[in-house]
Length: 123
Image (cartoon, rainbow, N blue to C red; front, side, top):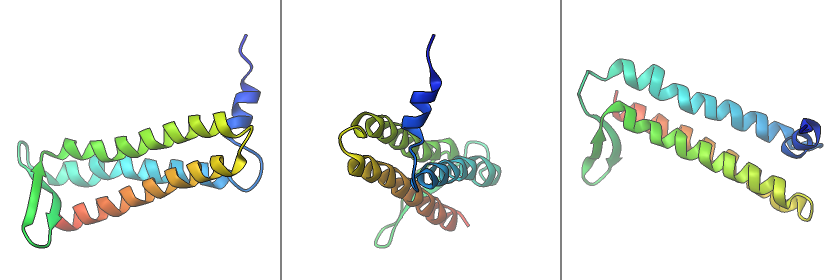
């Protein structure tokens, strides 16, 4: 039978770094909510929405609203990969574990900034 307590102790390490995991989870939940609650209702069926805006060329990438789901999927994959790698390296390098978790939090924050500009381009 598998014991969950050692695994949970490695995922949620002691100390002040738990807030990074909780914050990352909240940012990812918000990043997943943006396409479903702001982009999907505003998009007409079959219509393209701008997903990238270039200052020199204007809108240079447009797609259907569900293509925007790749953005939080990427951030979720970074979070999962960094968490697994962090659990593996924590035994010999706690600093690298903290860097990986902070990096995942940074990616989630940058995804929210990207969605802010996508929403501005679609306003």
